[in-house]
Length: 125
Image (tube, rainbow, N blue to C red; front, side, top):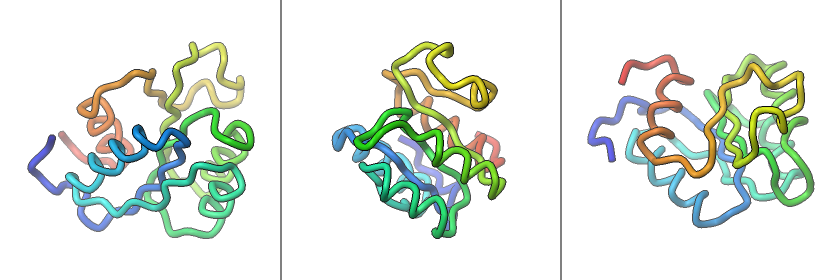
C-alpha cells in the first residue's frame, strides 16, 4: 500500500455491504490519510450520510442491502461530490444516467482503488 498520506484530511464515504471488501477499502483510505465516512452497508444509512455528512468523495457499491445506490449517486451529484461505482456487472447494467461516471470493475486491486480515489480527490499519484 501507499506510504504517502496524499489524502490527509479528506473525507471519503464508503458504501459497501460486503464487510471484507469494506475493511480493505477502509485500510486503503486510512493508508492515504483519508477519514472514512461509514462504511454504510444499507441503503437507508447511505442515503442519510450522502445527504448530511461532510464528504469530499465517495466509493459506491452499486448493489447493497436495501437496493441499489443510484439514489445515493443522485444526491452526491447534486452536491457536486465526485464518486466511483464499484460493481461486478458490465457497464450496461449501470443505469443510463450514470454510465458516464467512473467505475471500478470487481474484483479490483487496492492499487486500482487507491489510484481512483486520488483521481476523485484531484491528486497526482
